[in-house]
Length: 311
Ligand code: RIB
Ligand code: CA
Image 1 (tube, rainbow, N blue to C red):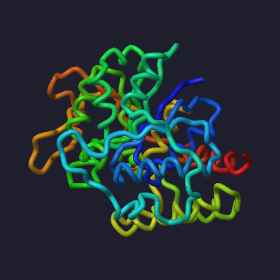
Image 2: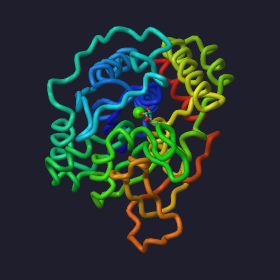
Image 3: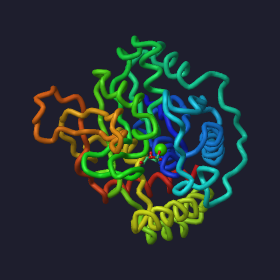
Image 4: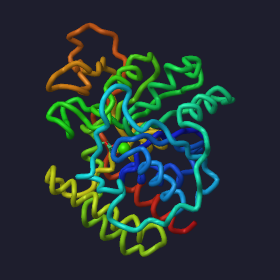
């Protein structure tokens, strides 16, 4: 069974990523670390505790990380995720406290003690991951792969040039992309297609289970926000697709390409500059997701919600 750590900024799609991992018998979720992104560090940490309370996952360690990027001012996304970071339904007040250890120290300790390599699944800005690599480079030997939701080859969302997670902390992203570690970039080119439509959301609501009855209104809020801003016809589950690729490798088709993170551009901050034609002759450093099996992803996502309703 693959061992994973999810580093996230819940966030509706981060919540779906956690749910997909927690429902799966193919991965062992060792812990959740949180970072500021979709909302402040305080709110994303609280949201992670609320989601795990809903899932009755009290035994899972949750460690809070950075409240701001390495050098930049924090950018949050209330227009997409709301003031709480998980608007749309009343999640239960947390019945778990999280652990009294910084996310970076939890990541380092867990990796250094690991008997076998661990897959890191970052689904927010890469601040915690970048600092962990700087603070203790020896963790690299126990990182099997980093499968991250972030970036894009051709798409964007927070600016015309960049995807939110990379944009928020481009310096941390550069540390990760230049680390030499095996990286799978699950970017907007595929995650914008990994969508639950309004019809799918209505079907989830009809399940009327303890998890589905909370998830449906949350997804509807997220879908409406994406519809208002991007004219999408549903909820793009960006982060859950990164988890899906770990559970079922090959759900995205990748190409090995050179990717550099823009940290100096006036209009291009956070762009994942992808050398699709090999023009730079730079050694490819990232497996970039370019295609996705959408029906298979949706089947996995709805199957996970059904599974969690039964627990
Ligand atoms: O650009 C989409 C990404 O930014 C997702 O991870 C979403 O949760 C936000 O963090
Ligand atoms: Ca996220």
